[in-house]
Amino acid sequence: MNMRHEQISILGLGAMGSALASSLLAAGREVTVWNRTSGKAGDLVARGAREASSVEEAIGAGGLTVTCLLDDASVREALGPAIRKLAGGMLVNLTSGSVRQARELAGWLEGYGVRFLAGGIMAVPPTVGSEGAFILYSGARDVFDRVAPVLGPVGRPHWVGEDPGFAALYDMAALSGMYGMSAGADHAVALVQSEGGDLETFKREVLQPWMEQMLAITVAGANVSESVPDEYNPAMQATGLENILSASAEAGVPADLAGHLHASLWRMQRAITVG
Ligand code: FVH
Image (cartoon, rainbow, N blue to C red; front, side, top):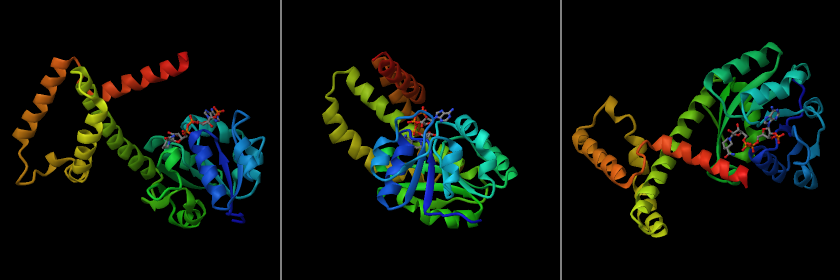
């Protein structure tokens, strides 16, 4: 493979693709960017990025190609017409998707002689490049070894195995943990709000220190039903949960945490769309 790996082509300049490009530019990488809709590359170009007018042109820059698009369908749609140009090259997909989608994408790309690494971003746009940011990768180890130093500036590279589906698996599972936390926090705030409690004081003085205290214990105790430790009292925990269900019913706050969060996210999106 004759590729200039310090040159990186980023396909997709949404919030995340732009943050990736920005941190790579800050680290001195040569960055080429492409986005389906024009007009998103201005700041990056002002900081030294090259803007490609097509996917083929971006791939033709000759380095590592990185996709960071909305979903699996958009990756297929963007790469489809330019796939032959990628033959013999290397592609890292940092678009979220399912395990099956990652495995099928790997098979499709390998059919065209593309070396592929699947990724999962454990960061949000403002934390890309920060100390806590890390990126899950899965796929051939030699590809990971070549990609890791090149994309290192966006987040600590963490390889989770040869199976291209594993980055997506761990990504989805970790996101489930995060959404669970989010749903719990939203529900907690809705309960306090329902009785006229002071939200800011509750968040600062109760919820945050409590969640911080419980984080490590919660992670360590996940799936405790598979192997119940001696000191664990499931009856007490079940009764505690029943108290929360009763409190929610009294307050008229839905106790289906994920459903509550899901509905509230779509409410927010509708409010943004309506303006
Ligand atoms: N943002 C975040 O907090 C999370 C953190 C963890 C990882 N996710 C995943 O990253 C992918 C990209 O997310 P994003 O935040 O950049 O998303 P958007 O700002 O909505 O940008 C979407 C980009 O995708 C382009 N796009 C959409 N459909 C197509 C298509 N059919 N063909 C080509 N490009 C497409 C879109 O282009 P445009 O609308 O500007 O023309 C944006 O560049 C995502 O998988 C997250 O789950 C982010």
